[in-house]
Length: 248
Image 1 (cartoon, one colour):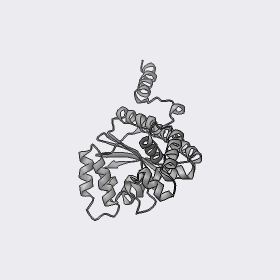
Image 2: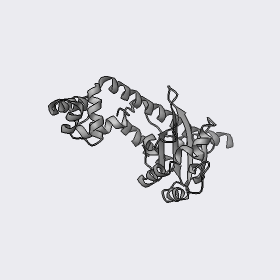
Image 3: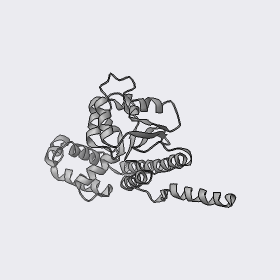
Image 4: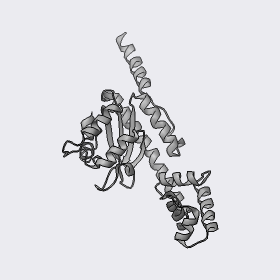
């Protein structure tokens, strides 16, 4: 009786840990954002983060974010403190290929002076008592931190393995959206990118025309063509998509 029940229990455990999705169908960051929300709900986490690994101390934390549901105030605190690039988490991820798990101390500065305590309090208030993180690289070698946070215990055993493989699959989907952005960059002209960049900085069409030495009508034409190439419905959405794709 025992031998016949074990396979059944194993199948039930596998089904309980399953998180099914079709990687080939994921084409946009919005779709990936939806999947990440499903993932943390499935595995009982509350927060997620995908960010470029900081390569320089002057890089703002918010500039490295790709996908995240972190509270805005927590992101702002890390921008102010500049602590993320020097955190225990980043230092340890640089030294291993294995997932890391730990408490709020992972996001403390590796060589802090005690000023990180206000950030730790924000973590506690944001259901971020514990973290599960890994370092993944694009095919071009660019490093990214992928992290799930919440109040639950550290994933272990089969659950840990399945979660790790799922995050790798999701990251591969994200990298395809980067490739899509590269394709759009090749389609956008230099002038279109300039117009989008100045508009993102808050400049009007008339101001952009003066800056670039062209007519306001020509600026509008560049915006129309850029909006079409970015598959956006208006100028604001075109700017937002260009920023998400790191085109501007």
